Image (cartoon, rainbow, N blue to C red; front, side, top):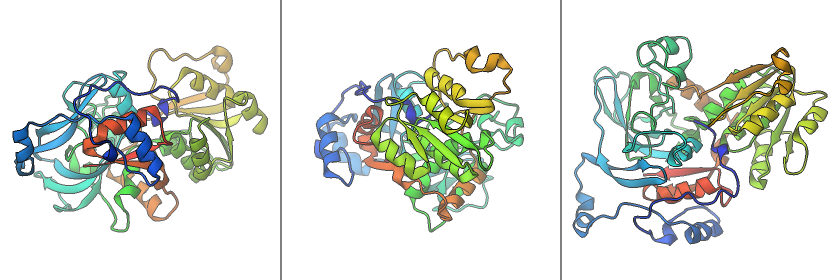
Length: 416
């Protein structure tokens, strides 16, 4: 949900609780062999160690259990066996075929965003329908489906006002109430997932699209595009996007799709600079090499029409304001912690006709259908953002790699 961009270089390893060291030759899978060697040397995988008896019985485990990534507290996640969900009325169970890790999951792991211990985390699911509850129509067991990170009920005041992320679960409005997976209910980093309000949230995947082509649509593409949509970018606008992690890269792509004529990206990581140009940036400014605010104003003859903040920091939020022309729009995608301040001089003392909008990614099956159609038509290709692949049992090593931003990582495919 919140940007994966929120990690910064040099933060080092997340401090995970060690239970078992895995075979280091199996830790990571990526085309360059150097990636596997680098990850194997630096990362230990933690999985609850089974007894000798349970190891013998593992292949005969009952169908009522599954493996899942469970949050137990800050810096403590474990892959362990838990109860397999059962679909109730209006619900569905899907067998996960592909998922991934989000920057918000890192916030949870570090204790920066609180969730209850014992929760299965993750919110980006692709899978196959395993079970359907009463009242869910138009689907069959075995259908391939994409489910958004936001799962609106489709009936409450927020949903009927097209504010799906603020879903009130049948009545009213609840701030970020649409984000349930890995937040208030069990999430997608597991073998199976219970989908609430299935009728509103199961999006069938066209047969000509692969899991890899659609998995990033569940969150980062929907979020990044919505940053551009909420800013109401107009054809011919000049846009600056601060940070080019996965969310920022999708915001860059979204700005280009909507019609921005000039896109400036702000990023210092060489791999992300390269990907930014691929996603549509005309110019990439390195904040370590120049005064970004002054350079944006020079390049845009006085200020950008739209600035998109995709990092979640006070300094980037403030610089977004300073980059805007009077009457411009700041579209905020960042997940902030602590106090966020608006300096009056960057805001024309509140009377410069500036607009600040915030966005949590839209969800629901119609949003997913529209995003998949963009991939089908080859207007958007998210697959270059998937840089690494791990098995579910290796997910703690994947978290370590993702949090520390080693090896050019952008997004990691997780297969149960």
